[in-house]
Image (cartoon, rainbow, N blue to C red; front, top):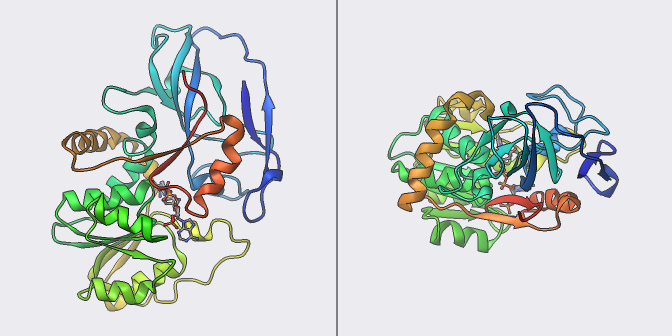
Length: 333
Ligand code: NDP
């Protein structure tokens, strides 16, 4: 197999010195094991966090280990009755083309509902994050005004569309006129703010003069502050991520407008999608129905280059070169 391993912990943005591409012999399958041929791996902002040697919701990737990644693929060989050759599955296979694993660590996917990349996006972790972050953590109510940042990304695009499907007014924040036009024209957002060319605080004030009920934060930093300045009474700020800070070498100044939480009797709550694992079925059923009805559309952005293309693919996230869910194509099988 070919795989990507962590060579050095990055300081700041990962670069070519962070990674090593290695070749390994596949061990013979033990009883009960399967060999997976990986087709796509998910490229996630969280990967940057897994490289830091700090206490978090999962242990860090160790130097020398295969980089952790969710993938989709097919069973190439099987020594168990639980999974047959040719079945489509998802699991934490890592950035590799071949993975020997135990069936208990993989989940079957139904590719008649959606293709593999969509099982890493709308029907995978980002879709689950949008669904539970908005409905459970954000306690969405019809008529709410919802603002979401990194709105043209995997999670953000789903947040806006799910909010819309529940009768909310949705405003997306994204980088550049093309992404903003896509949000409004294709995904049905009510408005979009181009944070690279507008003053977010002033634009939000204009678009939501009564204030914002839910701010779903994917980026942190100044954008979070601009949203805090525009809350409505009882607002919920959902802390999903803070990608603008992930490559910083020192901690950014705190949100200077946090006293808005007091003024507007608002709350700010962080969450980790894995805590909802026992309810993924519910979210997948709902999202699959919206996809089928056309209420939600799932866009995937497929980076090429196979296993060796991983470093460049990850880098794309940090200057917004993806629209929709970013996946890396490992192999066509
Ligand atoms: P995206 O598909 O949204 O990709 C990342 C996007 O972030 C880029 O396309 C870019 O869009 C934007 N971005 C990058 N750098 C900056 C910056 N400096 N300032 C503002 N925007 C920036 O990724 P995901 O949808 O997978 O993840 C979105 C967020 O959700 C991340 O913060 C991630 O960590 C978090 N997350 C949290 C989970 C949880 O359980 N809490 C689970 C899954 C994801 P643009 O062109 O608009 O700048």
